Length: 466
Image (tube, rainbow, N blue to C red; front, side):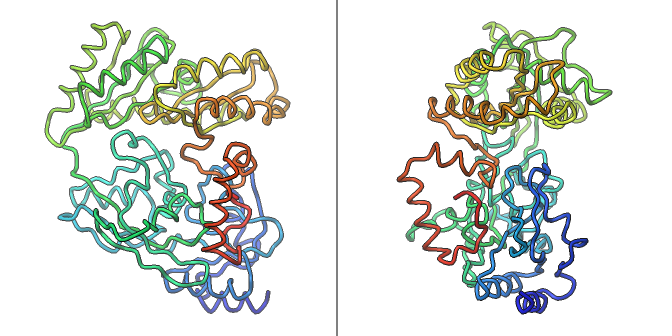
């Protein structure tokens, strides 16, 4: 190991080498503090060539590599094991935006770029990079790519994989695949980039990407709508899509229970309505012209007339829009402040969301009377964060002992609706065993075959996904 450590130091220099526990400790624990490991070292290369040198050294030493970007993984995908033999390869120093081509609506950026900085750079060129999620101030492009991140704009713009035209990847052999093509049409065989997007670092290290940009919206409108139940939320989604078409950028849902948590744990937050309602939807409409507000108000007027919506608040300023979004975006943090809870990131067909919520809730109520459902998410693309908090007055730690039983109810329900147990957070270590239960044998065999073909030594992020 001493020889490998010296080779790593030569590859990245003293500035890129962290070899003592005091230095590498922050990189060895996941964001939720659920997993902690002990790496051999943390290396922080500053170029693709340095990444390649690190990977070659590890391949020759048969040392495992744990790729890591902003370390905001929610499933333990970027955390090493406790053997002290794995090398964390952190890409945060690869943080250059190499090019912006407004005429081609593309941006070429390195894997260590913080997502918010990509959004800002695109706006500087009067363009939009639409990937947006709660961790955008700290998460980095490499992690977004490795988990195929979703976020709030999927309804209109798609997941991360839909926003990528090309990749640069260091393969497990240390070879560099230069696939940085800024092409929207390229029908020359297998679309190799899609293998690495969503692979959670198990097939190689993504070092850069060509990203799609879009015209910067000239108008935007945001509203929160009060509803009687998830069925009305689905009806409102259909009505808004019919009226606004592709201008409907986001459609989020959350319950009164979610709102109560935000009001309790974020002092100064105001409820959008004077009276409580069972269900809420948050809509955003954007347009390259000046018609977003008119389109949204017309859609809401029709929904009120059809008795789909009970009430609505439309933001009258950018500050009010941010306040309405905060009601949705602060739910996860509010639930965390409330105490430990059991989380799920699932997806089912959009049309099945109301039935899934009702039937799964009934099953949980039978087994865990009084448990509080905190259900919110991206109705427009079928992705729910289906969380469970202990009943009032019940200690959190004993309730968390029901994790496996709760997961079985929720995930079996997802499977009945032909859904996914991981919509946007990935598999990592957290859901690896669950994946074996819900993927067919053939699917797992195909995934293992791809892994063996690209990473025959098995050094890329072992123990994750498969």
